[in-house]
Every structure is written in structure tokens, then in C-alpha cells.
Length: 266
Ligand code: NAP
Image (cartoon, rainbow, N blue to C red; front, side):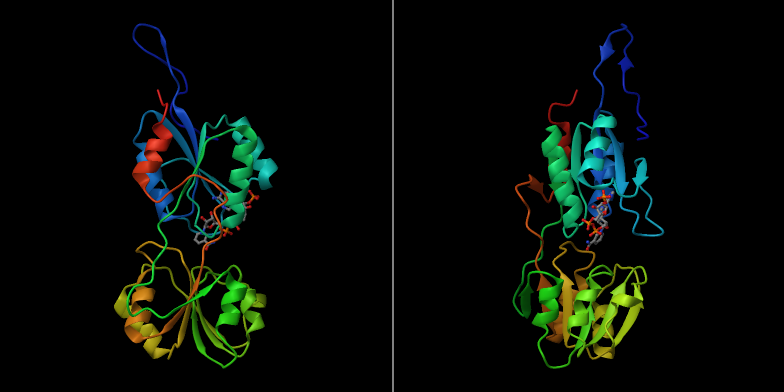
């Protein structure tokens, strides 16, 4: 990995200063970008951001970037050892369950400290009409038997789950074009990247006569407008719960992530 800061620092007296803590930051989220900024500004840390490579034009980062999968748990374990990574932050999306599990296993195998950084989940407030679903397959069933007009905002991965409920008309919003083989028979694809505001989300839902919104419980402000718009229009929301966290230390705060990285730092 292309770590930028010097590993061994000699001070004016000629003694060897301790090396910076080497950090692997698993990214692909706004939180990861914000943490990358903080790491870049901290002399006691050296970091690399890892992206899956799903987005063709990823946003710029303030740390060196590596792109692409590691090759499962074994590949990640090899990478962490070869690059002498000291600490790992999993700041992938809360629904990136495979990467989270690979990080958990690889860090456990090597005894590397791991922290999950994710935005807090959304909580229902007065006026919300939420129906809970465990996953995308569950969300497709939760829409019920009668045909509906569904605003589907779960991203392009996993769309094939909705082939099991072909009676609905789906309005599918994604950043990158979905695989046509995953598309339900009645659907319109809307290619757009947020952030969106409440007014424009309400306008979209009104114009398309949406009667159900399907979303992952991603949390955070940048995609919350659709939840507020659904509340104001009385539209039902099928809310997909986050995958389980299997015992990994978790924070929602950038400051806590920095404290974790600086624990025991030189
Ligand atoms: P996933 O199912 O958990 O991961 C599938 C595989 O993609 C992993 O096993 C790994 O491949 C590779 N991968 C995932 N994140 C990576 C990273 N940051 N760096 C290097 N390799 C990575 O993940 P996903 O749900 O497809 O999400 C992919 C990326 O998109 C994540 O980084 C996530 O932060 C971002 N994202 C996801 C969502 C979502 O709703 N899932 C939403 C917004 C952004 P190997 O096994 O080969 O290492």
C-alpha cells in the first residue's frame, strides 16, 4: 500500500522516533471520507482508504486509495500482514455485510484492533407509517399481494429479490445502471445521485403516485429526505433492518473513531 508518511523518523538528536500507526480504512461512505480527512491531518497516523470499486467515478479522498476486493478473508488477512496494518476501521455502508464479516474474521485471526464506524440508524417518529423487513426478500413480501406503485431505493444490488413480487410497478432509483436481468417486469429506472431535498422527493412521489417506499435503514442526513417526504404524504415505508453486528466494537462518532486510532499512538 502506498503509505505516504515516513515510517521511521530521526529527530535532531539522532534518536529514532516511534513510527506512525498504520490504518486501513474500509470506505465507500461519507463517514469514511470524513474520517480520511481527519487521519490525513494527524501526523501520528498513516492511512489508506480501500474502496470496492463499485462506483465508476468515486469521489476524491484525502488519503491514498486502493480499489477492489482483497479476495475474501484470506486475501484481507494476507494484505493486513503484508502491509503491517496496525488498526482497521470498517466504515463501509451498514449494509455491506460481507466486507464487515471478512474484516471481523481477518482482524480476529491476526489480533488486530477493529472498529466499525457507521451512522446511527433512523428511528420512526410520529406520523411515520413503517413496516419492518429483515432483508430485501422480506421487503418484497411485505408489499403484499395487491399491486402497488413502489419507490425502490435499496440500490442496484439485490434488485432480483423483487422479481418475486412482479405485480407491483417499481420506480427504481440507483446511481449506476442496474443489471437488466434483475429488473422486475414493470419498472422505471431513475438514475440519480443524491443528496435530495424533501420537496423534490415529495414531488417525485406525487408525480409517480407512489404508495410505498422501500428503503434500507441507512441512517444519516443525506438520504433522509425521502423518509420525511413519505411521512408528509402518508406513504407507507418498508424499512429494511441492518444486518446483525457480530460483536464488533461500534461507534457512530468520528471523534470516537479518532480516539480508537490514537489509543497507544506515539
Ligand atoms: P459487501 O457485499 O459487504 O462486499 C462484497 C465484497 O466486495 C467484499 O467481500 C469485498 O471483496 C468487496 N468489498 C466491499 N467493500 C470493500 C471495500 N471498502 N474495499 C475493498 N473491497 C470491498 O459490500 P456491498 O454491499 O457490495 O458494498 C460495496 C461497497 O459499496 C462497500 O464498500 C460499501 O461501503 C459501499 N456501499 C454499499 C451500500 C449498500 O447498500 N450495501 C451503499 C452505499 C455504499 P473481497 O471479498 O474480494 O475482499
